[in-house]
Amino acid sequence: LVAFPIATDDGRQLGDLEFYEKDAAVDTVAAYCAKNELPSWFRKMLAAKVCERTLEADKDLLNKLPVCWRTRALYYEESIQAPDKDRSYPGKLEVWEDEDPTKAVEYFLLQAEKEILKNRTKWDAQHERWEKNRTKNVELVVETEHVARRRAERDKALKQISELDWLLDNHTLSEPMRVPNGWFRKALIDHVCSLPGLSCEGRRKP
Image 1 (tube, rainbow, N blue to C red):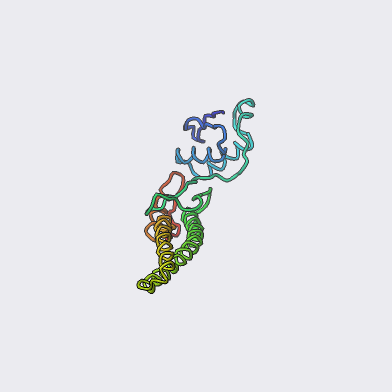
Image 2: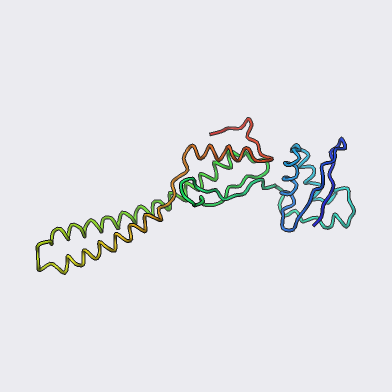
Protein backbone atom coordinates (compact mmCIF):
# COMPACT_ATOMS: atom_id res chain seq x y z
CA LEU A 1 0.00 0.00 0.00
CA VAL A 2 2.55 2.58 1.17
CA ALA A 3 6.00 2.91 2.77
CA PHE A 4 7.59 5.57 5.00
CA PRO A 5 11.27 6.10 5.84
CA ILE A 6 11.79 6.06 9.62
CA ALA A 7 14.63 7.61 11.61
CA THR A 8 15.38 7.85 15.33
CA ASP A 9 15.78 11.14 17.22
CA ASP A 10 19.55 10.97 16.75
CA GLY A 11 19.15 10.76 12.96
CA ARG A 12 19.80 7.04 12.55
CA GLN A 13 18.02 5.77 9.43
CA LEU A 14 16.09 2.55 10.06
CA GLY A 15 14.71 1.79 6.63
CA ASP A 16 11.17 1.90 5.28
CA LEU A 17 8.11 1.03 7.33
CA GLU A 18 5.99 -0.81 4.77
CA PHE A 19 2.25 -1.40 4.98
CA TYR A 20 0.48 -4.14 3.03
CA GLU A 21 -3.16 -4.80 2.30
CA LYS A 22 -5.13 -6.65 5.03
CA ASP A 23 -2.31 -6.25 7.60
CA ALA A 24 -3.22 -4.60 10.91
CA ALA A 25 -1.32 -1.30 11.09
CA VAL A 26 -0.28 -1.77 14.73
CA ASP A 27 1.03 -5.29 13.96
CA THR A 28 3.17 -3.87 11.14
CA VAL A 29 4.58 -1.23 13.48
CA ALA A 30 5.28 -3.81 16.21
CA ALA A 31 7.06 -6.17 13.79
CA TYR A 32 9.13 -3.27 12.41
CA CYS A 33 10.16 -2.12 15.90
CA ALA A 34 11.00 -5.67 16.97
CA LYS A 35 13.17 -6.16 13.88
CA ASN A 36 15.04 -2.93 14.60
CA GLU A 37 15.19 -3.60 18.38
CA LEU A 38 13.45 -0.36 19.23
CA PRO A 39 12.13 0.35 22.75
CA SER A 40 8.45 0.14 23.66
CA TRP A 41 8.08 3.93 24.00
CA PHE A 42 9.25 4.38 20.39
CA ARG A 43 6.84 1.67 19.21
CA LYS A 44 3.88 3.30 20.95
CA MET A 45 4.83 6.73 19.67
CA LEU A 46 5.17 5.45 16.11
CA ALA A 47 1.90 3.48 16.29
CA ALA A 48 0.08 6.59 17.54
CA LYS A 49 1.45 8.67 14.66
CA VAL A 50 0.43 6.00 12.16
CA CYS A 51 -3.10 5.66 13.53
CA GLU A 52 -3.55 9.42 13.84
CA ARG A 53 -1.89 9.96 10.42
CA THR A 54 0.52 12.53 11.80
CA LEU A 55 3.73 11.17 10.29
CA GLU A 56 5.89 13.73 8.51
CA ALA A 57 4.85 12.88 4.96
CA ASP A 58 2.74 14.10 2.06
CA LYS A 59 -1.01 14.05 2.63
CA ASP A 60 -1.49 11.74 -0.34
CA LEU A 61 0.78 9.16 1.28
CA LEU A 62 -0.90 9.53 4.67
CA ASN A 63 -4.28 8.91 3.09
CA LYS A 64 -3.01 5.52 1.90
CA LEU A 65 -2.34 4.34 5.43
CA PRO A 66 -4.59 1.48 6.56
CA VAL A 67 -7.24 2.24 9.14
CA CYS A 68 -6.27 1.22 12.68
CA TRP A 69 -9.17 -1.07 13.53
CA ARG A 70 -7.49 -2.05 16.80
CA THR A 71 -4.92 -0.37 19.03
CA ARG A 72 -3.02 -3.34 20.51
CA ALA A 73 -0.50 -5.24 18.42
CA LEU A 74 -0.71 -9.00 18.07
CA TYR A 75 2.86 -10.24 18.37
CA TYR A 76 2.21 -13.94 17.96
CA GLU A 77 -0.70 -16.07 16.75
CA GLU A 78 -0.20 -19.72 15.94
CA SER A 79 -1.74 -23.18 16.15
CA ILE A 80 0.34 -25.39 18.45
CA GLN A 81 1.06 -28.96 17.42
CA ALA A 82 0.91 -31.68 20.07
CA PRO A 83 4.22 -33.52 20.57
CA ASP A 84 2.81 -37.07 20.53
CA LYS A 85 0.73 -37.04 17.32
CA ASP A 86 0.31 -35.04 14.14
CA ARG A 87 -2.49 -32.97 15.67
CA SER A 88 -2.81 -29.45 17.02
CA TYR A 89 -4.20 -28.36 20.36
CA PRO A 90 -7.61 -26.61 20.33
CA GLY A 91 -7.55 -22.89 19.61
CA LYS A 92 -4.57 -20.66 18.85
CA LEU A 93 -1.87 -19.25 21.10
CA GLU A 94 -2.00 -15.44 21.01
CA VAL A 95 0.44 -13.01 22.61
CA TRP A 96 -0.62 -9.37 22.59
CA GLU A 97 1.26 -6.13 23.09
CA ASP A 98 2.33 -5.54 26.73
CA GLU A 99 1.08 -9.00 27.71
CA ASP A 100 3.26 -11.32 29.79
CA PRO A 101 4.13 -14.15 27.33
CA THR A 102 4.26 -16.73 30.11
CA LYS A 103 0.70 -15.88 31.15
CA ALA A 104 -0.44 -16.06 27.52
CA VAL A 105 1.02 -19.57 27.22
CA GLU A 106 -0.51 -20.67 30.52
CA TYR A 107 -3.94 -19.34 29.50
CA PHE A 108 -3.76 -21.09 26.12
CA LEU A 109 -2.77 -24.42 27.71
CA LEU A 110 -5.48 -24.10 30.37
CA GLN A 111 -8.15 -23.60 27.68
CA ALA A 112 -6.72 -26.47 25.63
CA GLU A 113 -6.70 -28.72 28.69
CA LYS A 114 -10.39 -27.99 29.39
CA GLU A 115 -11.34 -28.89 25.82
CA ILE A 116 -9.18 -32.03 25.82
CA LEU A 117 -10.63 -33.28 29.12
CA LYS A 118 -14.17 -32.64 27.87
CA ASN A 119 -13.51 -34.71 24.74
CA ARG A 120 -11.65 -37.31 26.79
CA THR A 121 -14.64 -37.81 29.09
CA LYS A 122 -16.96 -38.45 26.13
CA TRP A 123 -14.44 -40.78 24.49
CA ASP A 124 -13.83 -42.81 27.68
CA ALA A 125 -17.58 -43.22 28.31
CA GLN A 126 -18.24 -44.51 24.78
CA HIS A 127 -15.24 -46.86 24.87
CA GLU A 128 -16.33 -48.26 28.21
CA ARG A 129 -19.88 -48.92 26.93
CA TRP A 130 -18.56 -50.89 23.96
CA GLU A 131 -16.10 -52.86 26.10
CA LYS A 132 -18.83 -53.81 28.58
CA ASN A 133 -21.10 -54.88 25.73
CA ARG A 134 -18.31 -56.99 24.26
CA THR A 135 -17.61 -58.65 27.61
CA LYS A 136 -21.31 -59.48 27.99
CA ASN A 137 -21.39 -61.11 24.54
CA VAL A 138 -18.20 -63.10 25.21
CA GLU A 139 -19.74 -64.46 28.42
CA LEU A 140 -22.87 -65.44 26.45
CA VAL A 141 -20.77 -67.32 23.85
CA VAL A 142 -18.98 -69.25 26.60
CA GLU A 143 -22.26 -70.01 28.38
CA THR A 144 -23.97 -71.37 25.22
CA GLU A 145 -20.96 -73.10 23.66
CA HIS A 146 -22.33 -76.63 24.13
CA VAL A 147 -26.06 -75.83 24.15
CA ALA A 148 -27.48 -76.67 20.73
CA ARG A 149 -30.85 -75.00 21.28
CA ARG A 150 -29.12 -71.66 21.97
CA ARG A 151 -27.05 -71.67 18.82
CA ALA A 152 -28.91 -68.70 17.36
CA GLU A 153 -28.12 -66.66 20.49
CA ARG A 154 -24.47 -67.67 20.26
CA ASP A 155 -24.24 -66.78 16.56
CA LYS A 156 -25.80 -63.38 17.25
CA ALA A 157 -23.34 -62.78 20.10
CA LEU A 158 -20.37 -63.73 17.87
CA LYS A 159 -21.57 -61.28 15.25
CA GLN A 160 -21.89 -58.59 17.92
CA ILE A 161 -18.33 -59.31 19.13
CA SER A 162 -16.97 -58.93 15.60
CA GLU A 163 -18.75 -55.61 15.13
CA LEU A 164 -17.63 -54.34 18.53
CA ASP A 165 -14.00 -55.33 17.83
CA TRP A 166 -14.14 -53.20 14.69
CA LEU A 167 -15.67 -50.27 16.58
CA LEU A 168 -13.15 -50.50 19.40
CA ASP A 169 -10.16 -50.72 17.05
CA ASN A 170 -11.28 -47.65 15.09
CA HIS A 171 -12.25 -45.80 18.23
CA THR A 172 -8.74 -46.36 19.63
CA LEU A 173 -7.31 -44.67 16.53
CA SER A 174 -9.40 -41.57 17.32
CA GLU A 175 -8.29 -41.39 20.95
CA PRO A 176 -8.13 -37.75 22.13
CA MET A 177 -4.72 -36.18 22.64
CA ARG A 178 -3.18 -36.04 26.08
CA VAL A 179 -3.14 -33.00 28.33
CA PRO A 180 0.12 -31.00 27.85
CA ASN A 181 2.69 -32.04 30.42
CA GLY A 182 5.37 -30.08 32.27
CA TRP A 183 8.26 -30.36 29.83
CA PHE A 184 6.06 -29.30 26.90
CA ARG A 185 4.79 -26.27 28.80
CA LYS A 186 8.37 -25.19 29.57
CA ALA A 187 9.51 -25.75 25.97
CA LEU A 188 6.59 -23.69 24.63
CA ILE A 189 7.27 -20.83 27.04
CA ASP A 190 10.98 -20.87 26.13
CA HIS A 191 10.05 -20.73 22.44
CA VAL A 192 7.61 -17.84 22.82
CA CYS A 193 9.96 -15.88 25.08
CA SER A 194 12.68 -16.11 22.42
CA LEU A 195 10.52 -14.56 19.66
CA PRO A 196 11.38 -11.06 18.33
CA GLY A 197 9.75 -8.31 20.37
CA LEU A 198 8.87 -10.61 23.28
CA SER A 199 10.74 -10.99 26.53
CA CYS A 200 10.15 -12.90 29.75
CA GLU A 201 13.06 -11.43 31.70
CA GLY A 202 12.11 -10.78 35.29
CA ARG A 203 8.73 -12.42 34.83
CA ARG A 204 7.43 -15.53 36.54
CA LYS A 205 8.20 -18.85 34.86
CA PRO A 206 6.47 -22.16 35.60
